[in-house]
Length: 394
Image 1 (cartoon, rainbow, N blue to C red):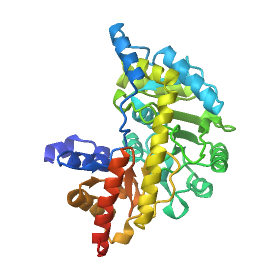
Image 2 (cartoon, rainbow, N blue to C red):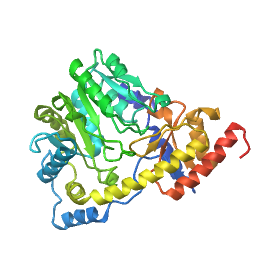
Image 3 (tube, helix red, strand yellow):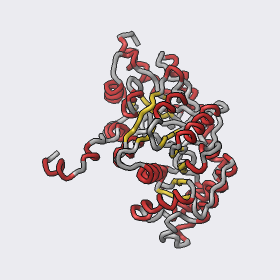
Image 4 (tube, rainbow, N blue to C red):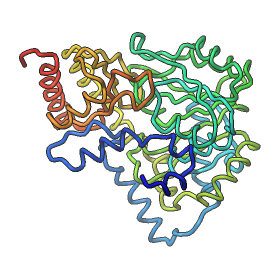
């Protein structure tokens, strides 16, 4: 980097490394015969009826700005679904913002709540964008470590200890990269801590529909004392295979939304109208396709967990999202070296666990949102690589 560029960019930009996910994705894109288990994206195409809704929208000339808050039809549908699934009511007129994916909603929530020097509690391993969002806002992350030894369970006692002097708590469950979920007692305990500590809670629930083995999900804002202090984030990219449409949402009390929409209206104006119309169709008629995709992920999850168990790579039992986070320390390699060599030697792309925080060191993230055929072949290649790394005959 030139001296001028170093001076031109703010210190907080220099402080944030490039995304470890995108780095491995970009390398893999230059290679042939790569099975990518890296980028967390559904391998399904957007269901045809959702695409057709967007085509109809285009043909109807719906190519103009919407309200900064989004179309009222989509906001009403979002409110109805949250009420149906979690029993919490939001006013679609003033308590919901449609965003450019859940990613913008995360940025809005963090920038709107966290100021210079503010502390926010963040369980880790955590999605790669969470910590940088806090750094860009001028805040400080107080990490709470979780461990594979107890399936990445978040201990409320650790959260309570870390929350002393903090302004906010960030929750991202079901979790990327571990697939961990929060059980009912933990959610209840976290709600009590948030009320007692007077915390703002930012809850990214983008994977809320992708849970397995009887695991249940309920919005954090549904618990006693939480609606008035929770910024609830969701979207359509993971559940409805709509990553490229870039449409998500944020729900919060009216006074908080009124503040956050200031950031949104100056930076974004509004989410794409056509994408909002597609999202409305997803909420209205997308349940059958969603269930088909979720069932496919559940089958793939079984293949991955059985495969890593056979390779003696402990991964716990992820109950949500579409990730596994196996421990690769038995190979004698760091997670960075493991990922780099696996890619170059066996053409399988995974993400080093250290990209997700200190608690992820010694692990790699596997995204099983790919075909069963790809997963089985990837496990063969991983098995061959692990045997070589351990010095064992394959």
